[in-house]
Amino acid sequence: MGQVQAIGTLTLFHAFVRMERIEIRFGRMTAGGFMENVYALVKRFYLAHGRAQIFVPRTLTERYLREAAWRGESAEGLCTDWYCIEDFLTVITRRDDSLARLFIHIDYLALFFRFADAHIDRRPLKRHAEDYFKRMNDFLSYLDGTGKYEIEFGELDADLEMFYLTGRFRLPERVEWEEIEGLTLEDIEEDERLEMEELNLQLNDLLHKIGVYFRRPKYQREISRAAMIYTGNLYDVTAYEHSSEEEKETFWLRFWDYFFFDYHLISSDETPIEHYNVQEEKHLRQDEREILCDLLAARFAVLTVEEAYEDHIICRDLLREEEVILPRPDIPGKLERNVLFGHVCDEGMMMLNYITAVPASKPLQRRMRDTIRQEYELFLYQEPQADMDDFLARQAALVRHTIDMLALQARLNVLPQRALPPKRPKWTLSQRTCSEEFGALAAVSEALGFSRHARVLIETMFFDYAHFDLKRAQTAETLTATIFLFAEINGIDLTSLTELYHVLGSDKRRVNAACQRMREVLGCIPFDPRYLGEEGFVTMLCSTAGDQMSVPKIP
Image (tube, helix red, strand yellow):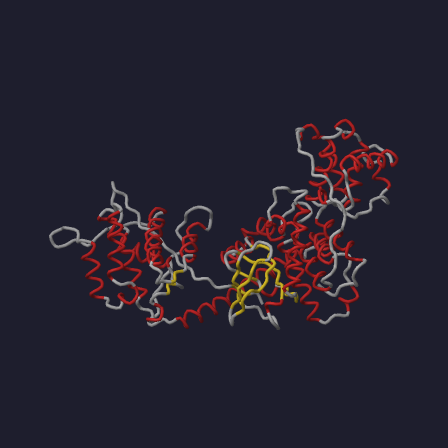
């Protein structure tokens, strides 16, 4: 089932000093009432805790404090630095020597509460937490800079975020943590394995809950449309009916992956995950909200495997030229001769049960990359400022189909071989000039079932034409022609809807004439990328490939 790449969570805080009102007890006072020198405190600690030398030598700690003093840190501030370090060392030195230079799997949230109990005279505030984390971050950064330590700084950020789960500072529930005596790397790995299993269960439970939510009658139209886009018009339904139960299960796993993360709802243009988060967040448990937050950050990625190891693989994002490290998926054969596609979270989560692996030689991998980049260039005709993330967020279905088709027939031409249209005109008119026309187009296109994104493209095409001939654009026949022409470009035949010619007060003859004018003025071509919706891009791909290939198997 779904896999999670465990990442250790270091959480670092900083103690805050308010000079006009001392809220933190900075040092131990001597019998005579004078504050002890911070170096005397360090010396006393290391004499009492000899094992600390194995983890962070005393000379290194003193050098860090000395450099802080040179930068102007006050005596009180140096003592606060030391109290943060002292508590950290007290806990960390209970570990096995093998972990002496590997600072991972540390509960810094619990360490903060330990520090607060000892050194803050009141309920900790935002400034106390942030100051503690800053001091610990500075110290660990110093250790990291020596090149002798491996430190997972992501743990710091994750624990600090626990104070801001509601969007503003709030003291989280108190946690206690006592380091296991003699903790080894094997213990940590086992803890991470158990944590991964627990996260997998939580993830799958949440995805099941989301699936049940969208199986309600209210969303049946969305499911049907998503299935049409996902399968394309080359899909062999008979092959599905005769497939094994395992193949059917795989089909639906991959469909739901597309639906949850890549499909865009008709009315709102949200992905189902985004929609579910908005509608249901207040009904979710805290752990479910945290997982959902990770899922919302997921990006569709096409990966090639560069190196494979026993427990992980090093991948290259084929389209973004980024390195991605993932848990090793359970895929037979030589992983390097596969293209993987699915969703990756920047936080490190990867749902491996939804990953599709497609056999592809290195030359075929390059061909897939080049073809998808050509599709991206087409997408730029309608979104000139779009980057690869924008393209994949909108056209993941197109990319999925492209990979599947090329994997079946590597020499297939999946894109039309024809001249490209002119660039869209630069808008100089105010959109308020055509506000009534936009309203009419929105009403009719929504009644016809076009998605919100398609309605934006319809209005864009109309306004592009208005820049060439505003007077004619503001007529019933041109408004109606805009809808017919958009449908034609996207491979949709509306000519059987004879009443559509009259709905805005025109007729078939005038609408057809207006269609021809728009086509000529804008230089429209079949599957014109300037006005091609998600369904249109998939239809273009399938239409181009359809005459060259046999019907594909289940994707």
